[in-house]
Length: 73
Image (cartoon, rainbow, N blue to C red; front, side):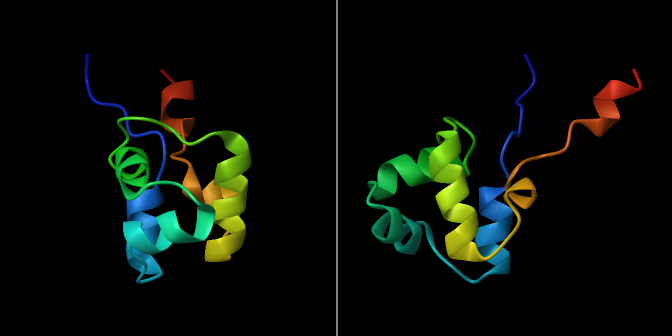
């Protein structure tokens, strides 16, 4: 099964010049858990994703990969 990229945390953190450690400290999760989210091994709960969007000052939709290309198959 091909790897699915569901969230864009890695990209958005890089764009905002923020680290996994910074995010972990801000939201009260371990750096290891944030690393699993960033690498798309696990996904953050929706309420945490919302909090992250506020911290990074981005629309929550910017943190999620679009699936629009799949709809036309």
